[in-house]
Image 1 (cartoon, rainbow, N blue to C red):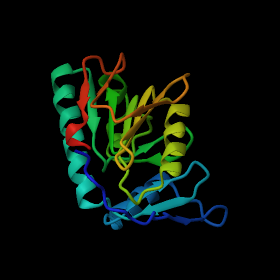
Image 2: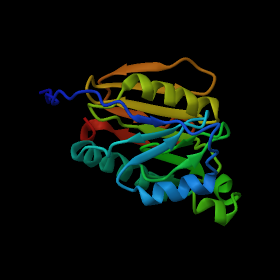
Image 3: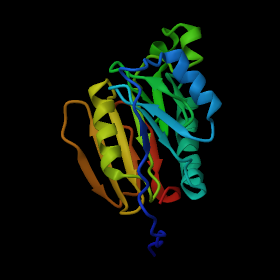
Length: 201
């Protein structure tokens, strides 16, 4: 039996332009985010600040299930570290992004100076997941997934609950679209990891 999701109006994020009048440093952006924790804030590679509303409760509950599965595998595997939706990363392009879930090899994470790890670490995760709510723009999220891949992500999942589709992004490969899958494999990036989507749908 298919669960009917409520129809929501797509919400467009607020985009603030500062450059070239003001150049916001990485430290200033971090402090700005700390002062506005009720919002999801990211930075485009071109410098614009993107402000989004908090995730809805249902989406967050399903994201919690997703992160829980990744956490269990990460602890058992031991070769990397996992992150939830509150963590931000400064990509090589200069963009600051906060995927709903991410994973980084432990050796790469530990190579970052501790002081930089405390803010928006200068690294692009090897693996990312985006789980949009019904009001999020799928088009914008697809662009974001492509950005992750261009900046070093090896495997990314965009999970569209509204249409029960998953878009799989891989380095040097075309995007793969799956219809209503029950499980997703971490392939050779997260060997042995299987995401059970029954708790996500």
